Amino acid sequence: MCLLCSFIPASIFTTIGYFVLVTAGTQNSPGLNLFGLILAIVLFIVALGFIICGLYMTVSGKCPMKKFMESKMGN
Image 1: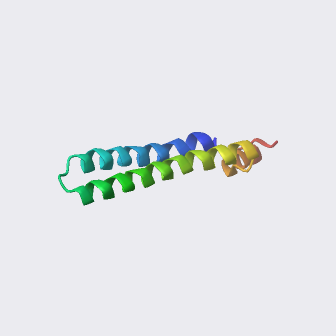
Image 2: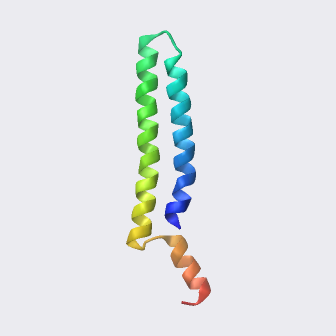
Image 3: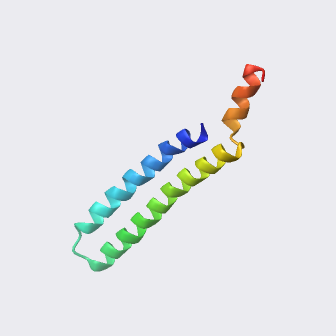
């Protein structure tokens, strides 16, 4: 469950990263291009971090949503 919910912020950060990458590529300034490239890479790493954290929470069984649903089901 946590893995599925981690896809939402990951897709948002990935979309913003691609927007920054495309926008930085259209500029004539080499300094601005480099800044945009570094910012896009950081945004992609943040998006990957959401996926990795969601995967860890799901695999380790520490997902709070799963525990909440199990308590409501009476298991």
